[in-house]
Image 1 (tube, rainbow, N blue to C red):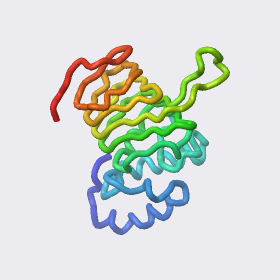
Image 2: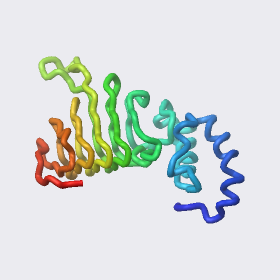
Image 3: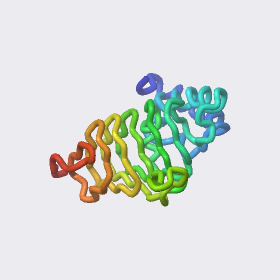
Image 4: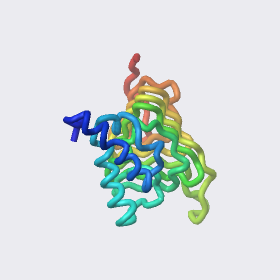
Length: 190
């Protein structure tokens, strides 16, 4: 679904869509490029009501999210509403019970990506190490099947190659990183 074909109709129905959707999701998440004369956001809302509120997949999340991903604590994620599409993927895992995940504007996150703010203590698997925030800069691209570990900071315009395990920060940005552990394979100027 793309742009609404009849913008006048959309302007008339928009307040009703907003009022109804606000029963289920926080209003601050029902705006931005996917809701301004675009039906894609409203499609996510309808699917979200079905999957999240009726069928109870991810019911605690205050914005439309795919039923096929896991978010530990939605209140520890910071993102721009124009990035709502990053929560429509399949298989993503945002483990952020005590640490924050901060996602910069324009960042793209592929399917099956794990972003983790706390790991198990290797000396006692029944405990977790202290949480460390994960920060993704603006206009980053996190490739499919990648894992970003606690404390990682990626600067603006960082591309993470598919299947990478990011164990350390690349705060300078403007680079392509890949591998396990991820390392810079190309610098780029933006």
